[in-house]
Image 1 (cartoon, rainbow, N blue to C red):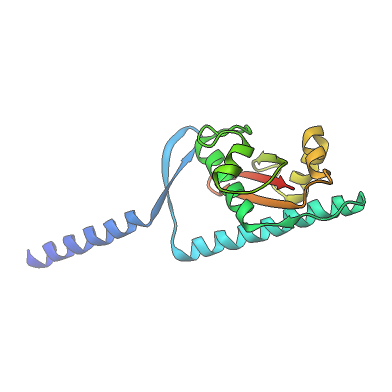
Image 2: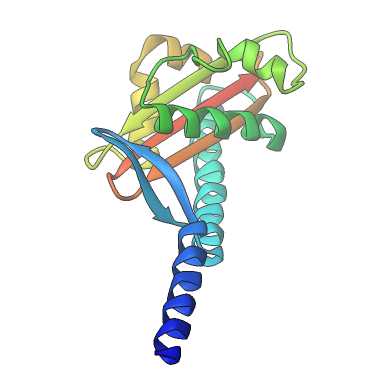
Length: 179
């Protein structure tokens, strides 16, 4: 009996530790789901984010340079804001420029103390069939307002956010430009 109690207590402690290592995320048609977030998964997610930020910036700069424009510089402070927006869009299941929490993109940038006189935002959502950097940037180039943002000669800085839900294979990209 004593061994059973000790095993039960140990199992409960282990189960409690496992539960505390879960991150709550929202998914379409579900209220919330626990997704394991161990240190290795967090490190892998960070690497994917950094690679995505560099790849998006490179793709944007290739287009800008082909049009005779100066490249934009990836900025970590603007990327932090874009990342917050992307994660919020994924968690709250919305796809519009106006955040229910932070307002319009320029308001959000100001809330996070980003200095600028002109700004713009491009957003993209995709699932299984449209998830590459090339497809996302091509989509922005096909949309007049986004194309104007990507090719605006006044923009010299960019922040890139990328949020993913690997369970549902949903991805959100947010690019914020400033002068």
